[in-house]
Amino acid sequence: MDETNRATWLLTQADLRRLVGAVGVDNLMDEVIHDLTEALRGFDAERIDVRKREGFALEHAGRTGVLEWMPVMRRGETVTIKVVGYNPDNPAEHGLPTIIATNSVYDCRTGHLQVVVDGVFATALRTGAASAVASQILARPDSRVLGLVGCGAQAVTQLHALSRVFTLERVLVFDTDKDVERSFAQRVAFLHLDVRRVSLEELEAQSDIICTATSVAVGAGPVITGQGLKPHVHINAVGSDLPGKTELPRSFLEDSLVCPDFLPQAVVEGECQQLPRERIGPELVSLVQAPEKYEDWRGRSTVFDSTGLALEDQVVTQTLLRHARRLGLGTRVDLESLSNDVMDPYGHVMTDAEVLCDEQDLTSPAVSQRAVAS
Image (cartoon, rainbow, N blue to C red):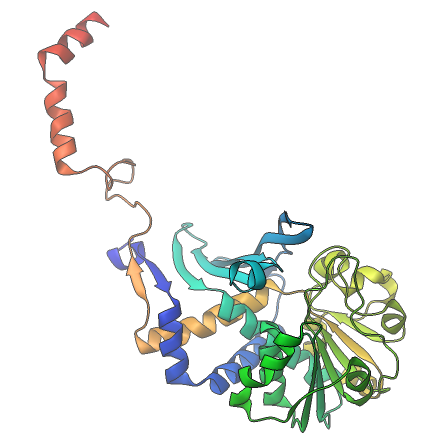
C-alpha cells in the first residue's frame, strides 16, 4: 500500500459548499437522479449486497430516536456504510437537524477506511432523488400540483427533486408546526415556484402527488385523512422509519399499489408494516427495471414506501466523490495508524525519543538485575 492509499480522504461541509458552487445544485440533483436510476436498472444481487438498517433505539423524554448503520457492499471492491441518527427533538432542543449522518467507504480487500463524507446533505439529496425516480414511474406524467405534508428539511429536497422531473404549477404545504410551515417558502425560494400554505383538506383534494415527510411519533399516525384524494394520486411516504411509526391510513394503502424501496426493511418500519405480504407491490428495483408493467397504475392511487435504501447512500456518495476528485476538493489525513512495519502496532505512535529511552532502560543495571532475578 503506497502512501496515498494509506490516507483517508475527508470531504467536509466546506468542501461540499465549494462543490455545489461549482456544479450547481440543480445539476447535482439531476445527476443523483440519473445515477440512482442507472444503479437500480443495472442492479445485480450477485454483485451488490444490500443490508437493512440495524441500530439502537434512543429514548429522549418519551420521544423515540435511533442511531443506526446502513451497509452496502460492491463485492470485491468497496463497502459503503452510513451511520445515521434520527432524533425528532434535535431542532427544538439542540439546534441540530433531525437527521445527522456520515458516510464512509472501506476497501473490501484490506478493510482500509478510504473516505469519510458528510451524510446530512447526502441523505436529503438521495431521499429526494429516490422519490423522483419512483414518481416518474407511478405518478401521472401530467401531474402539476404537489402537496407536502411536513415542511422540514426532507421536504426541501422532495420538492427540489420532483421539480426536476415534473412541471409543477403549484406547491401546497401543510405542517402542524406553523413556524416551519411559514418558513418553507423562503427555504425553497431558489426554485421559483408557487408555494401556498393550505389546510390539510385542501392539500389532499388538489394534489396530484403528495409527499409525507413528518416526525410523527410512534403510534400517532396517520398524518393525512385519506379522504377526498384524487383517484390518480401518488404518495411518496418518506417519514416512516421506526416500528409502529406510520403516516398513511391503512384503508388507503389497501386500495393502492404500495411499492417499497427495500421490502425487508419496509415491513419492519415502513408503511408496509400495515399490510400482509401478499398486498405489497414491487420493490423500487423492479419498478425501474420493468416500468412498462406498471403504466396502468398511473390512473390509480399508488404509494412509494421510502424507508431509505443503502444503495442510495452508495450512489450519492460516489456522485459527490466524482466531482470532488475532479475539483481537487477534500483533505487526505493519516487517520489509521498504519506502520511501515506491519507487525509493530506502536510504530506510528511512539516517538524516536521514547524508543531511545526504552532501549537505554533495557541496558541499565537495575533492568539487568531484575532480568537476572526473574
